[in-house]
Each structure stands twice: as structure tokens, then as C-alpha cells.
Length: 267
Image 1 (cartoon, rainbow, N blue to C red):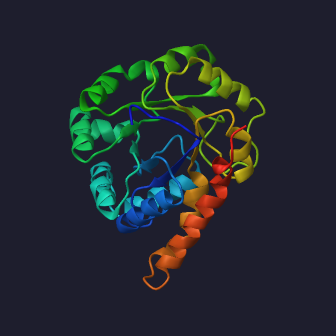
Image 2: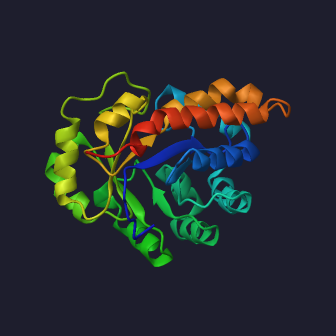
Image 3: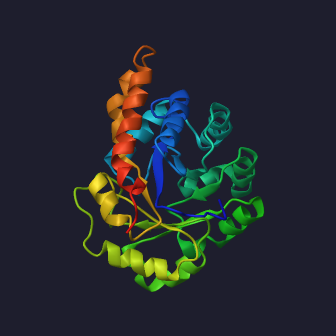
């Protein structure tokens, strides 16, 4: 994870641990790997997800009803490995659950269960050094985020980034967006100028046309809300033994349709 070599733009999907159930989360992760995912972001459900829009909020609520916790989400990783998931897995969590568990305990648990990185969206870069150092000691990079509003901080954040650098495409919360900001390509170009690690972009990417537009300006795309919305639509079928396999196949096809442009030659 710390020595990522990018030969083509990466597909980085986001799903919520425990949605619609822990066992199905594992099967969804495997389906995404089969659909070409390069890295998986495994979201930890939280009752007050300030960076997430309604789609992921609903998924978090469903997962919380399944009694999913930060510890249980991390402990899904070795279960995923047993099922054949080989790609790096990033734990996406808010800071409060980490604080409740204890920062040192969190990284010890993440290390024990084979997490490949951590992303904490509500932990400001300027306040992240103690957590970053704990991650370094555990061999687990703390992924930094940089937003269009971070103009004066881009160089500082980018020059200290670990693993990869997550560019937030739009202001506001996550969600499916019909259009992306006209200045996004310019922003990504500026970030790449300063970054020593791969630059990926997320928030609002929900169409293959958007992926096609962005692939020449970044090293990867994060797709979350569109996939989580598809899981919501397939939820009942995913939980019926006689319909699960076809539902998983439909999910794989959908993921591939979104990211097909990444397999085309980058100009």
C-alpha cells in the first residue's frame, strides 16, 4: 500500500460494513474485486456522518441495526481474505469511534487484522500528526483529504500525504451528482503538481461519463454513493438465498459499467 505503482487509473469503491449484513458485505467486496477494483474503502457506520449524504446515511443506519461497530468492521478484513479478497482494504471511519476505542488500540486492531490504510474525514490535517505517527509505527498509512477550498494548504497536505491523496471533487457531502465542477480538472492538476503519491478523486462520481472525463487528470476514482445506492436497491434480493447470486452478478455488471473507461487507453 505504501509503494503503490499506478499503471492505469485505479477503481476505488466504497461500501459500508454491515450493509445489508456482515456476510453480504464480504461477498460484495469479492464482487467488486472481480469487477476490477484496485483498492476497497470499507466504511464504518456512524450515527452522525457529517461528510455523507442521504444514501450513505441510510446505509449506515441499516448497518448499525446489524450491530456493526468499528471493531467488527475491522475484523471483517481477515474474513474477506479467507473468501479471496486480495486487494488493499482501507478503513474509512470518523474520529469519534477511534477516540472511543482508543487511538493505540485502534491501530493495534487494524494492524492485527491486516488493514492497509485508514481514512478519517473529520480529522483536520493540522491535528492529525499524533494519529499519523501511530499509523506509521503500525505500518498503516493515514490517507489525507484535500478539497477545492484547501488552496493555501494543497502543497502542505500533498507533500506529507501517505498511501494516496484523496481529492474531494465538490463542496458539501457525498452523493450522486449529475455534474461535477468545471474547475475540477484544474484543481486535480494543481494537486498532482505537489503530490508524491497517487492522486485520486471522489465525492459525486456516479457515471461512466464522469469517469471518462476525469481519468486523464488523476490516478484513480472513488465511487461510493452510486454503489451504495445499488446495494440498497438489491438489498432484499441479496438476502434471499435463491436470488443472491444473480443480485451479486447484477452488482458486478453495474460496477463494471461505471468504470469501463478506466480500461481504455489513457490519452
